[in-house]
Image (cartoon, rainbow, N blue to C red; front, side, top):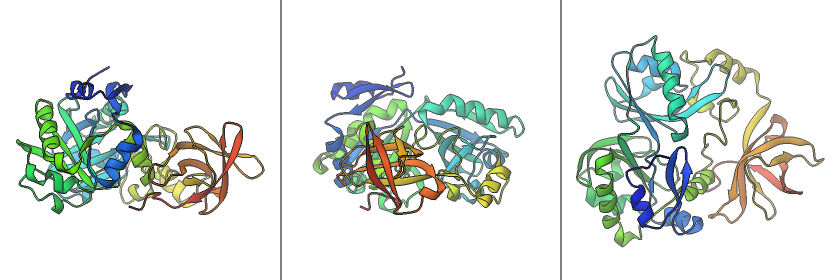
Amino acid sequence: MKNTALTHVHEALNAKIVPFAGYNMPVSYEGINIEHETVRKGVGVFDVSHMGEFLVEGENALALIQRVTSNDASKLAIGDAQYSCFPNEDGGIVDDLICYRIKENQYLLVVNASNIDKDWNWISTYNAAFGADLKNVSDNYSLLAIQGPKAIEAMQSLTSIDLAEIPFYKFKIGDFAGVEHAIISATGYTGSGGFEIYVKNEAAESVWNKVFEAGADFGIKPIGLAARDTLRLEMGYCLYGNDINDTTSPIEAGLSWITKFTKDFVNSENLKAQKENGITNKLVAFELLERGIPRHDYEIVDAEGTAIGIVTSGTMSPSLGKGIGMGYVTKENSKLDTEIFIQVRKKAIPAKVVKLPFYKG
């Protein structure tokens, strides 16, 4: 197991540390519900330094990115970020990612921790035809996600950049907590505002300490990965390995909006045909109509008890006080308000298909 530059800090805070994606990561400090509510109402800080970062540079950087990603990176201005995915040749998804345009011919791809090696091999294979300058800088950077409605006010004293002037999916590079060239991005995963800070590992502990000093009057707390999962699920954000994987297509997963057929990318013709001809399974959101907690891999059935799908993510929503989840069901059972049943142990609990996000703020 690897450690982040802040693992010893989490241990000193008596965090519950678990193995995750090859790293020792804090899953909780005080408890999921307390940490979840902290982010929804105040300000909380996640160490997500296990995420992977690839630098793509040179004259053919954009051409390579256009080939291996589903979204249209040619639309990015310097200072823009974009949610995208790596489609595979079979119609599934290698990984989802965020692409940042740093300079004219320089991009930063931020990928999931569990897929760093897979993604690196994938993009390197395709780069043989492009010759872009690729660097895997995942082990060099720490990443703090400072999330919540009080995040901007709490952190403004640490930077000369007006944090309120960074729109969603934009970023700026500048001073933050004594670091001159930090990346400050508004690409959060919680739905409660805030931003992310990328700094070199050697600066991580100093930045962490200054963040907590600045946020002391705002009730700032460290937040673990368990609350990160409940927060993202309330927004309906896909989690790789649960809601999307090597066998699920972006069309089935409701990610047509990041799948741009105005360009040629890996397996684009087949995915275009899938979009035009229709799909047999679709990722839907649902809420339970009775008490219960849906979990990953629970079966979804219809009123007759016939299997129609599988739960990919589920929890008891701390904000809503009810069971919520996402899962793939047959297309005929995917319409809004359709009644479905979640097989929780030996009981089929009624649920209905709903529109995302679950949490409206």
